[in-house]
Length: 115
Image (cartoon, rainbow, N blue to C red; front, side, top):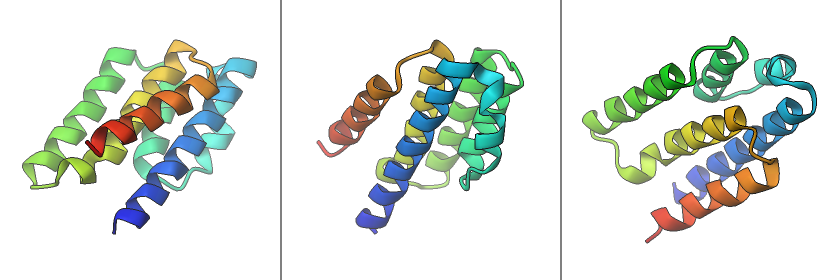
């Protein structure tokens, strides 16, 4: 299960960095086509919120509520890590962080989660 989770998370990181590259080069609205092809429904929804110019506080609130709901339902920290990665990645996109720095930041979150 751990390998599947890590592969899923790395896929999220790749998608987030791709979206960030598009956003930095062409603007947030330009991400829409790429985001619509995203397979992960949470990442897709979060990115569409920022494409639609939803206030960042609201986007963060929606994602953090989703994390809390998963924890309440008994999910472990490892199981909610993909949601935390998505949350941090989407925040980085809105802040205009360079994709390579986003990758470093998100990989640090993975390393920190392993103890």
